[in-house]
Amino acid sequence: MKETIGTTGLNLQEPLLWEREKRGRRGFSMPRRDVEPAPLAADLIGDVPELPDLSEVDLVRHYTRLSQWNFGVDAGMYPLGSCTMKYNPKLNDRLAGLPGFAGAHPLLPAALAQGALQLMFELERLLAEITGMDAVTLQPAAGAQGELTGMLLMHAYHASRGSPRSKIIVPDTAHGTNPASAALCGYRPVPVKSNDRGVLAAEAVAGVMDEETAGIMVTNPNTLGLFEENIQEIARIVHGKGGLVYGDGANMNAVMGIVDMGGMGVDVLHLNLHKTFSTPHGGGGPGSGPVCVKAPLAPFLPVPRVIEEGGRFVPSEDFPHTIGKVHAFHGNFGVLARAYAYIRSMGPDNLEKASRLAVLNANYIKERLKGVLHLPYDRPCMHECVFSDRFQRERKVTTLDMAKRLMDYGFHPPTVYFPLVVNGAIMIEPTETESKDDIDLLIDAFQAIAREAEEEPDLLWNAPGRCKVRRMDETGAARHPRLCG
Ligand SMILES: *Cc1c(COP(=O)(O)O)cnc(C)c1O
Image 1 (cartoon, protein in one colour):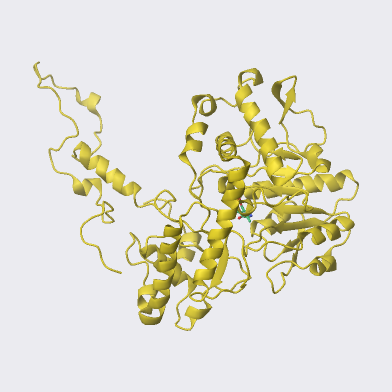
Image 2 (cartoon, rainbow, N blue to C red):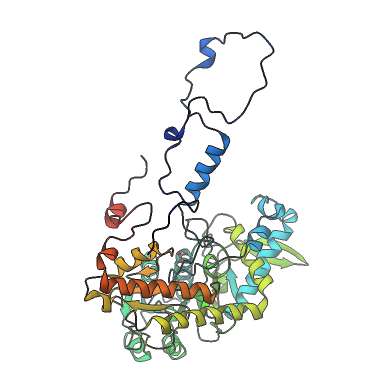
């Protein structure tokens, strides 16, 4: 890689403001004094903070440069598998920021919040239509909270039939949050292995499903980016023993308008609005994990639920079998407004097209990189593809080295070492919002990195070489975080 000379505006050696100061510089100019100076009493002054002397432009450039140290999807491609880090149209931010939405107080009486309540009512209907389900709660604040809510709904359903059950089947290709959510609800997760095609075989489910099992949690498409093609047969087996099928719909970006989750046998499904439906994420901001259910589970949904009464929209608590509240007020309303704007501005045809393009882009990357990186499951994928570092390991180059080196080429690293079923996994999700030109740049970068692994592996062992901070002790950072100073 050629070192660039000069500046692109990105200055990674930005000094502290105190190091930058020049005595006497000011960010303002005062009019000449036209009165006699009067001494100020010392007790009126107190301790004066020691601020550096700087001009306005010094300050603006300093903070603008610092803001550029961060990497986001507005700056470049973010192929983080399982996260759907797609570009979100600014239009949806703009609409969610309309004063009537952004300024609405959560304690407003329903009569003064008709627009917001109608938006929630209609968003529930839209999500039900997209997923093929009957009823929706918008309360959960994230995918994982949606899973917990879904588990509580399943628990309430079984309890109402007088048979509280104790176990949940979770395949090894499920998202890591699935067994955690089941356990948090008091269920014992029962693991089942996927087959050599990377999906769940119906026989494997039949072998563990019994009348003590509340149901199964299936991530579909799964975390290998593969569609669980036996899902209908699996649903039949689970339903046959009185169980329910939980669908983790966080990967909905691959199948909008294409797959009818309800028709496929799913009883409870969560969505990640902050992945598929136009809310930026990854910075720890608010998310939303609505839960969609089939009619038999609707009585248990959290309250308040927005209902329509004579053309008015009212939040109703009148659902005696509800599991109660899972979030203050109505959930993260700003995220709901973005999702509504996104769905309405896209329309059914463009939602479907977005999914088809997301799948096409992932398959394009899979085909172009499959000789460069090892592809453990060589078959058509959905919205993401999973490679491994098997070829590079012979040179003692690992997935981590390659991910770090990718940062030197200007890309956010993909998801690594997940899913666990692939040793040294590299999981790439391009999303539909990347152009072929940009995807080709990513492919070029991986090809260059694979050559470096052969010819100059120390470039990879020492990567990143061009970032603000070099290789970090990630375990140390997680175990002993230094939150200040
Ligand atoms: C992201 C994700 C989750 C968890 O969602 P959060 O909003 O991060 O809690 C669950 N399942 C799958 C498949 C995911 O990709």
